[in-house]
Length: 560
Image (tube, rainbow, N blue to C red):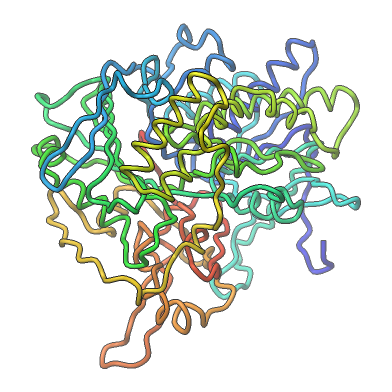
């Protein structure tokens, strides 16, 4: 710590957990469970940057209950469990501009089927898990952003700084300045989710991705709709490939019918797309004009919107999970199974594994060393086995496109893996470049024309952002940092037509020219940010760095 650093109170805790998502909450609950089983106790604290638990949680979501089964075997009998809509039917369709072709569900590899799963709001699942965690004695502090890592003299992670607030846009401390506090733990578990700002620093500092493939990502966009009574199909799940995306661009849609007459409609675009003119939000809105989707939504009402990046690298891209003083759990490491479009169960299972390793270490009188038992548990776990079976889907999709790669070759690969785990005609394929590096210069592509929003079925970004309940304290430094402020206009604009204008789902980035002409300027509307992290991932110059704003800022997702 530098001499001019503010003085902060320090709180010493057995285990600090950063992030109250499914991984962090599962880890906290399991720590308390194991301690109770052993007749001891541990101090466990979770800090969450959202205004409440669940405020920043956005997922499809069809939940594989294996994570809940491992954590809370009697969850079905527990009061208030918001896991109420079992999957009763499902379909897979390939869309064209005006129609679709159904894929036979009976012929699909078993891994991608949803029998035994539940349609849920993961935000509500996390709220419920948080109540249970608190009943066990876990302390949860929402609205507390972890903004800085703390290290011991030997270089191990010691803790995090949380709750620093009251710095103005000019970088000066306001009268309301609060220095925050240091949460110091024997171990710190990072459950920040996809592309977490501290997790990113840790992966670099401890070379956790050495000898791994680059992590891959998608952007997920989601609207929650109330649909007309005659169109409700509680328990129905639909996934689509194809239109409006071209065959060489990965992605697809999901449509999940809840028991209460609401429908989760979402669209995923793989962020390794080449064309810098592609506009993921525009593709999502275009999807809704398809006759089959428009018919479902007609007479309905959009009630919420949000967006989030998704880890897609899978088996080949999972970093080393432990480092001196802590570990990465959940999507901070990346355990999403792309063909299943699921990762919440794996997030929960890795939280449980890390918790058991941390408890054992503390009970042996250790602190600040590596939780090697967590890595060993993962290596022997169903999580790694599941990701191994699906390891070639994303590379085949990238190389051969949607029809041949994802539906044809990847389907064959999943079938051979289901017959004999690990069996593949392709061996293990690899991801060769980052999503940022996949972006090609604009002169290799043509601009894409997207229809204007009609305000009934399709919406402009700013209108939809209002339905995410996003808000930030305005008088604070932008949490979206530019390594070099000249790059957006001098490099990205002429070379890539500045794709930040399009890949951001919340209209944060604009290239503006003053009335009457003049040079273009790059404008950052940080107030709009929904914390999806896409800019940190897709910027072709890797010039944008996403950091946490003041705690409590960002979206406030209801039922997402």
